[in-house]
Image (spheres, protein in one colour):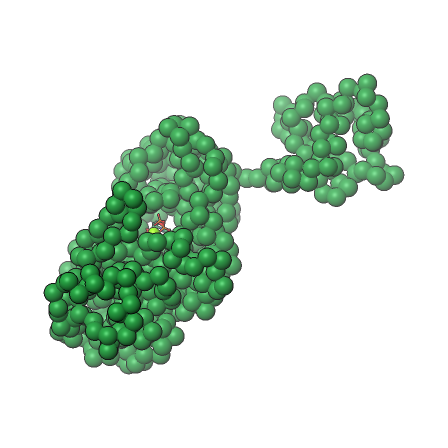
Length: 493
Ligand SMILES: Nc1ncnc2c1ncn2[C@@H]1O[C@H](COP(=O)(O)OP(=O)(O)O)[C@@H](O)[C@H]1O
Ligand SMILES: [Mg+2]
């Protein structure tokens, strides 16, 4: 570039003070908006090939390029600003990278959408959008929720076939979007399929494969010193290839050298039906064994197609004190019997020991419970050991994987659906459009294209109207969250 051209460019930049700037060491890129799109100008500084000579300009305060110089000198002295400029330059919006196909679920922290990558591979993804903070209708920004931080931080560090993988995180307009690999099914959906449509038990090989892969993923998390703390059917996903993926690390925590004790920050963990007895008894310390209890509950639920310990949750009082969960504990006692201090030596020291003593006494009937539901002694034995009252005696994920139930026929398979006929397969995940927030209206042609692509993919498993779905596809990520009415989770513990 000649000097004269450089001067022309410079005056253009000055006339457009909101140009975007990217800074790589001594190479600076300025993106200048023009009617025909952005024009990029590269400036090398501090060398002989310097074109715009910013330092020369800087010395001449009468020069009209002062605006640019201000920005320039700020960039030199404000690395944060330089970083933001670089980040903004590279930023691609969620909807420019992903075609939003529909809405999957709404939870405590945000909404999950099904999306397809717009690149050549066109892979399916689940995008979890964390709600921004709101004051009335005004979106404010008070920081990132602890749940989002944990979920992002932990997910970024881990990689295992049986744990859902995070592809990327996008920050856009005060919202966080986590892009996950897509999983067509989850355990809850399999339970519904067998209880509502098939009206038969889940075949033993499927049950065994599901639990085996679940323990595989859990062993990986536990070896990485991660407690999941919210294992339940809705959080355990399955791909269409029949591979189990542990999801929803929103409550997960690192246990290795924690800065504060686990109990201090999170008084209530694990959805109540899957909550281990030591938590119900008010334990201040707990460990990985709470996840193994939850897997026991999940296994029993897969075997019987309904939650084994379906208690009523007592709510926090007005002072946010954690109440004694009497009904939940009773549900456990009814099946497993009342624990004594031979079975659970630490029980007398539990904060809720006196509350437990006031309840009726029960004897165990787990063996009978299993007879019609888990058709093998080894299966009963696994469940019995996962339901050990004493957390120290409870089977670990590693011990569970070595258990004889997994080594006797039928053996678990890599594809959990192996051997099932198409009619036995659970249906595709339901996605809806009626719950989608109203978005920037779509072009009619776009609507048509999306609807036909979508209906092909869902093979008749769709619900809702195409109109709002299409508007979702067309809209900018910025307004994904506006005007939402939050749908209740399928099931609350
Ligand atoms: N990777 C995924 N693929 C498909 N569906 C998913 C995926 N992740 C989550 N979902 C669906 O969204 C629901 C909510 O996601 P989850 O991560 O559990 O968030 P929440 O904190 O709201 O429970 C899940 O129960 C599941 O139905
Ligand atoms: Mg969840």
